[in-house]
Length: 210
Image (cartoon, rainbow, N blue to C red; front, side, top):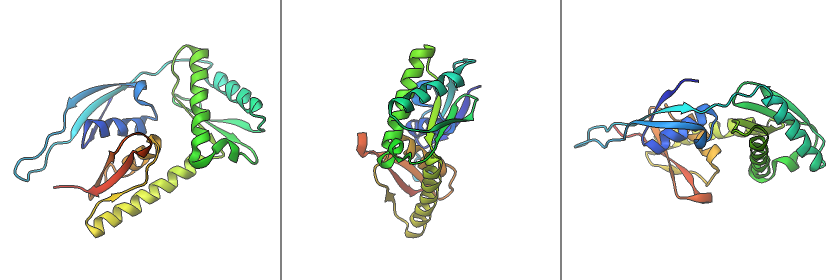
């Protein structure tokens, strides 16, 4: 995969957009800052930050087989009956666990699912001796959640536009914040930014200046 250029209000937000677009975490690609963000002078519109990202993608012929075996083993250890399906055998890999009564694998706000994916990635690193970009879903939960967040982002963007004031969303994990940023990245009326730290980090939707 060749490097791609991404613009955003700040370098940090450009990196978050890159993570969302590529489906990779920050340590899975290199960043070259082409232009820092610049504020406008005397009311003039400033310049957005511009970065170039180059994914660091490993090659592994048996990657799908390895990940599938790992997930099957974890399901067995958890005493959960489910079938691992491969949604994409191209990097980043995408897998979904299907079956009945799989809510235990999702947890509150997807926290258990996030832990399952993280553990899977760690085991994959141990097996392949390299980082492998992948996503693990359960019964399509992530897709439903993504669709819901996209609808919410668009609705709140209209509220910001009509009320002419910013709206601060509830705290959410990094992957969900990225969905909001990406959904509104090209919106002509509003922009987004993340504020606060740790588990309290949240997205603010505000009117685009200029």
